Length: 223
Image 1: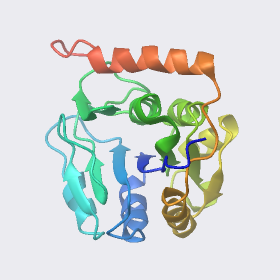
Image 2: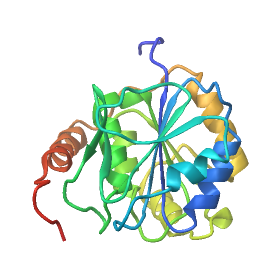
Image 3: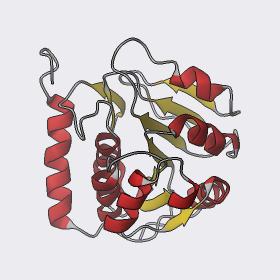
Image 4: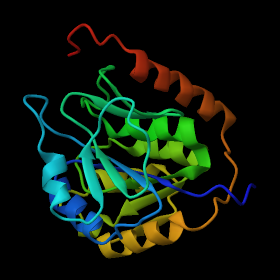
C-alpha cells in the first residue's frame, strides 16, 4: 500500500427524497474538506436543472453544475446536469450522453463506475435515499477497485430501496444516518487508503462498461 494515497474523491448518489438528504449531508461537511465531491440525483431530462443552486444554499462548500473537462478541486461539489451522465476520467470531469442505465441519465452507476476505474482506492461511494437499485452496481465497482462504500441507514431514508439494495448486494463499509455519514466521510478523507483493488475480472468488466458510457452515440436520441 502507498501511504500517500488519500481518499479524496467522494461520489454520492440519490434519487427520490434526495434533495433534503443531500442538503443535510453537505451542510455537515466542512468548507475546507480535502476532497472533490460529485453528485448524481435522478432529475427530469426536460429543461435545465437548478439542483446545484438549491444545494449551494445548504453548505459552505463550493457547489457547481458539472461541465465537461473541469479539473477536480478540493472543497468543490460537482452536480450532474439534466439528461447527461456525469463521469470521471484521469483528466477530470466528463459530461456524456451515453445510453441510459437503470432507466436514468444521469445514472448513479455511471458516475461510481467511472470513478472506480479512474481513481481506484481514492474513491468513497455514498448511496442515499432513492427508489429501485441504481447505484448498487456502481458501489460494487468502487469496492472492487479498493474504494470505500458508505450507505444511508434505510430506516432514516425517505425512500429506502436504493440503500437496501446496496446493503443487500455490496460489502459496505459503513451504514448510518446523515450525521454519522458526514462524520465518516470527514474521517475517511484524511486517512490513507487501505486495501488494494481486489477483483481483476470485475475491473475488466467495469472498464468495458465505462467506455460504453463515455463513447456512446451522443448524436441520436436514446430511449
